[in-house]
Length: 406
Image 1 (cartoon, rainbow, N blue to C red):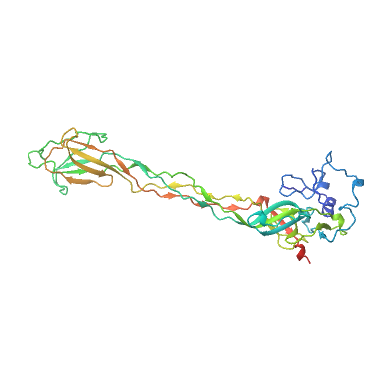
Image 2: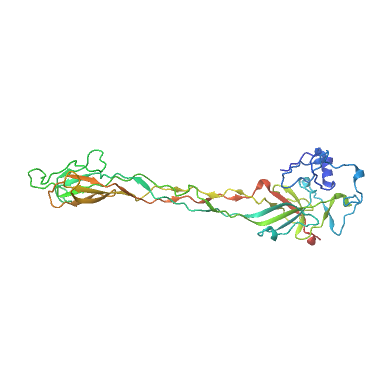
């Protein structure tokens, strides 16, 4: 980042009307003579950067200067190719960079640098920077979120098994429990067996086994849904475009070739380029002589990216149930089956037994199956935005292109 140093009054005047903006290989000098810190990594180099005295610094003896060279102080600026351009004036003129003249092109940001103007090879061949404005950055495109099939644990044993001495719709019928032993896991058991011909009550002549009522299985336990594949969905698309581009080209200027000390001899800015001064940050007002148009705010191509996708999540399963099969046997070893009934965790069931009064010797259940419920996925929504890099923004203030300069 370029930093202004504190300058004395004489040094400020010298900076405004001083000599050529020639950047040396090294940076140094006192604040009164240098004026700026030199940052070799800055996007825009300091406008005045004097060479350090040392073995690699050129001699400063006036006898070494070539009086007939292009920078000789002869008061003549070649009018065929150059103009004496006014230096900026105003209260903040010295906060700009007048002694590092830039020829800048502004235009539509078309794809491919080969489709954009180049720096003028004979006047300002060095590319200073490519910068941009008018950012187009719509929200991120996110991959959708999915949930894996729901999972749960199921108990294979019905909540109750009841022998009825009457039909299923007879509320007054006598009943007997036919549940399994405590902690029953559904394997074969003869608990609460009923012999053939048993009467309820005894001696009544009413067969005990006329129908059997089977309670529902317990509801699913530990029911859950997990996110499928990824918890944070991939950003499927980030579109970042700039509508406007700029190409800043560095040239060389010389105040000694103009009769007026408040002007600098610069190459003519031929359309579509224009002569511009620049300053770090965003500024609305341009100094005098550089108000050919409104100040232009330009930014590095890389944006401050804040777009993304929200994390995926799955809601609680709904509609799931457990299913098992209850088998009833005449004998006590689960070998003479006479009835089979599918049981579930939704409702109880009752079925008649034919013939009445038969023996009910044992029972078993099949391993339960979980009938998966559905889960609603959430997340995968775009958030955030891409923003211009305000910390490295540059303001350009320009004169009109030469062909339009009257």
